[in-house]
Image (cartoon, rainbow, N blue to C red):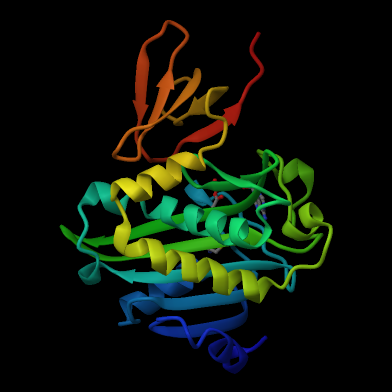
Amino acid sequence: MDQIELEQYLHKLPLGAIRYYDRVGSTNDEAARWAAAGGPHLGLVVADEQTAGRGRLNRHWYTPAGLALAFSLILQGRRLSFSQETISQITALGALAVCDALNQDFSTQIPTQIKWPNDVVAGRRKLAGVLAEAHWQGQALQAVILGIGINVAPDSLPAPEELDFPAACLSDLLGQDVDRWKVLCRVLEKLFGWLPRLGEPAFIQAWEQRLAFRGEWVQVSTGLQPPLEGQILGMNPNGSLRLQLPGGEERELLIGDIHLRPVDRL
Ligand code: BT5
């Protein structure tokens, strides 16, 4: 793939512009620089390889050359007429778009779910991660950079000791080669379908329908307090997670840096 081929491949999508790189540090950083320099709304940065791909809290995201998808979309603040609470759902927009794209093409083979709030899992393994970063200037939202990484081919995964949650790639799950550019195109189609509907009840419902580990016991750490254990009840209309604690009390978890994993409990 190169810049021209990618532009031709994605020409039907309403993208602002495209920048393709064989190798970058992080597509989110590249997109943020572009946005700050006047990059267009729905400008897309795609990289074949990332040398400093990031997850939340600067955790490393592995994107080796030729095997995965790593891309970031610029959402210009002046074009986002949503409340701040709704803006925080942009992470879920990315995860939902990935689920919908994969479920459209491969639903019978790999039903995907969202490990609240930002991971796409299949068969309880992480297939994709989403990193949405808002850039503010004072009270004004300059841009949100929505970055998505998807493991496509075998060997697109980091070594097991680098993982804090089991991971998987698409072609292993499907037992066949997967055209990553087709996946990129489909994810963007779904994303553009949901973007105007961010925060609407239909968006939250679609997100909740894909919620992984519902009814299960999970451990949730926010980094600030000791981890909480509870049972996932579902979601609230604002996108927060409903967790029932062992004593029966219900706790609302807002989107933020939350680390969630299922636990065995008798
Ligand atoms: C995420 O963070 O899952 C968000 C990842 C977002 C990556 C995209 S790629 C395009 C754009 N440009 C960037 O620089 N980033 C975005 P988090 O929930 O914090 O998970 C990070 C953790 O996932 C790491 O600590 C590893 O344990 C694990 N990990 C790293 N690479 C992985 C991979 N390829 N597949 C599965 N897990 C991985």
